[in-house]
Image (tube, rainbow, N blue to C red; front, side, top):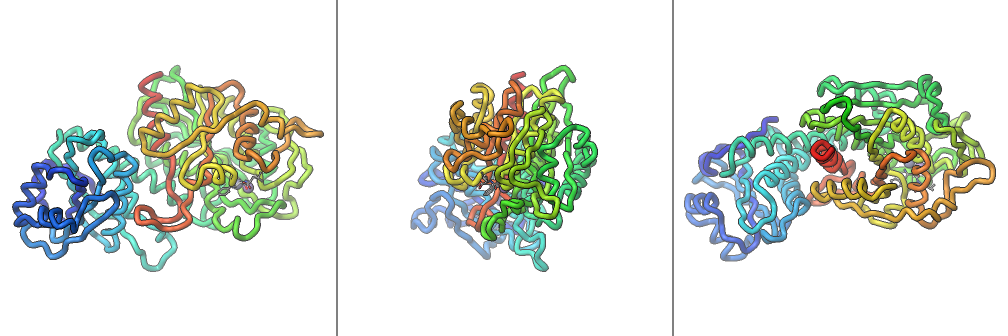
Length: 497
Ligand code: BES
Ligand code: MN
Ligand code: ZN
């Protein structure tokens, strides 16, 4: 797929579709006014008659256009110029992409909005639009005989901005969009396709294509590394565990290292604390944290950010067999702490415990972990908001700022010491579950035991990682959530450290 920026006028460009994002009750920009004149005033008549209002998320299709070289026009409402945010723009543009991507080999021209009253820069428009065209045109067709959606064959972004800068913004959007789609694909592949070994194979492929350094630890190496907590979970599966590591060195070796740690439970049956059918249906998504790490590393490498980042993906399947870990088992984690297992479905924290200590031991300066960790977080924050949990306020703020700058919604939860009381065990240093109350927080308090003093943020993405149904702006299934935020954290990390 080729994505290009051009300064050429909208009426001179050839493609199957012209996509025009128009704001509500805003004057038409110079380039749209020129186009309107070429179209004999069609656009201004539609606006005048309120057949098209520019309300956010609305679309109007115009077919059989003969005056210009794009026979179809899609008008996309952006809302008022003042109200446009990264998130609302993305919603409008993915809605647009979804509505015109049902045929193969489609070429499109997208006009860059020129809105004086918008707080977004031309480059921000270019990046979001490019990424959205790539994300919105890919559906859940991996296993269908006939696809319902097709990536665009050619995308041209047209506007009057400074060409080199806009092309750079478009390239950045392309990389982000493709990296989000990589994370989505990993989540959307069923657990027969993506299990620890095949996930690790994919990690190695990404390393080859991006120049990242990959390291895969197999079950024997994990044993040598004393990862008894993670291996406890893996015990009940015929699929052996893996720890996949991707290293990116974009700065001096003496510069600080950002560690990204992902929960990679390729299927979560619950283990002996078996999930009911309904709760298990979507549990191929339980590697969404590891998928976000993979997507982010892919983007960070391609963007050549001036920063050192290591991605750690803890890969296991939580299953039931004759060797399954059992309730009452006491596991010894890599850092020596012992854990009484009282629910085998609280497996994510057991995996992360060892991977977090490993990241600390390998010299992480700052850590972010991502995990589809608790249903309780979805109860607390809903399906679209990521829970933030941290042991250090500055680092938490840095991550939240990056989420804001990426248009992803996050909300910080308290980490009061008394929540840790729920994790006291009669027989071990910790137990792996607390009570029903504050379950997302007790999970985070559990993890805190494994990061030493390293500034650490835990992102619970149990809600946003997987969408249960299609929406106009988004295909159901894996969402690729937090890829953009992680890339933004890395970009900021490079500029401040
Ligand atoms: N993978 C689940 C959490 C989850 C739930 C992710 C819904 C996505 C959607 C996790 O391993 C789990 O089972 N958590 C338990 C913890 C409990 C046993 C303390 C839960 O949330 O019920
Ligand atoms: Mn579970
Ligand atoms: Zn899980």
